[in-house]
Length: 517
Image (cartoon, rainbow, N blue to C red):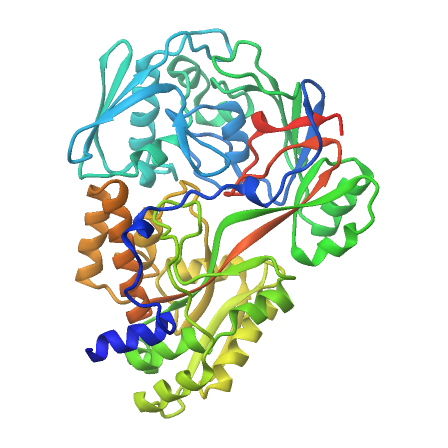
């Protein structure tokens, strides 16, 4: 057995390396429903107020690509496809589609009879307009998401064709995140006025945006698909976690994402229940593989073994997490079912550090001290403690979340850093791009990974998952990042609400109802 194989086997855990059967090469689509829902039997009608921790800066599908804005997008707008709560992709405005063998030409057949909220008919030209408008904008944050488009054109009155610059198998996920607008309406209002009077084809239509307070929608009676169950939905912007908990308890809010630390507050509550749901969010340690002692592969290989993932989950995350060895969560395309998690083995970590010739050089560990997850400072301290226990000289460096994010985006990390990835497209393509294939978090700049990234874009099904497995194995051996755990989301929910939270943490208003229970 080669030294390379021996090292990878130790990192993956005893008996785990290279033994995954062919049956495990299919990505697993996990369901948030597996971990619980809320309320009793659903009924039609009524209203709900859904709390959001942050207000998006803009709610315009042409100009803005924002995790928080997707809560409204998925209510007011439709994409060609739709990402379900469990992460699966189903038809949206397109009732069917085909791709050529190389996944770079995609035809979508658009369903007939779709109406915009202003009563006008959806035309294929509106779809072409939406995509071209994004591509022509220098300031649209959506532009990067569809930059692989070479041309978008109407084949006929019911078919739109995308010709891409390169094969791109996750295209079905990508188009789900692009809300279609009316060309006539958007041109009349412009990007300045459109966000405060948007027109889409979604199951809910816009009512009002009270900036800094809430965003209100009502059921669209002319919707082409299954109607929303609620008559009205209000997205309320509530930044403080304790205020979100109190709001659900007092019935001024119906649902709210809350940190694990707030879960005990709801014990015995008459009005509120805690709902757990698997998340697409993975915590990881990023590594600047070109910085000082971290240039040494053996030293890097010690890091995954030194971290007591389960202890941190149990003590600091109240048990709301699952250890992982891959940087995408279950439910995200690219997740390899059964992929091993590095065992906690501090003795093996010490041996690797000694073999590396490490001389005590200081290694910075950057994290969000404020503005991020409330547990970030404690988690960073616990990880630093684990690394110090095996002989590494760790210097903790905290910064406000925005500053930390800019440092990461600008490729300016000086050592290690705590970060999280939760791809809104529910596809691992963007994760590989950013972490391992030339993105701002890729310090290794491996030609092998650059090619593997292109290979997975051109592959489909089991073949694509097999390439993701090879990518994760490369990362396990080379330690460009250290996956830690898949988060479990926790919600405070009214006992009079019937719903199952989505794996991406985004509200699907059309799936939420009042409850008889």
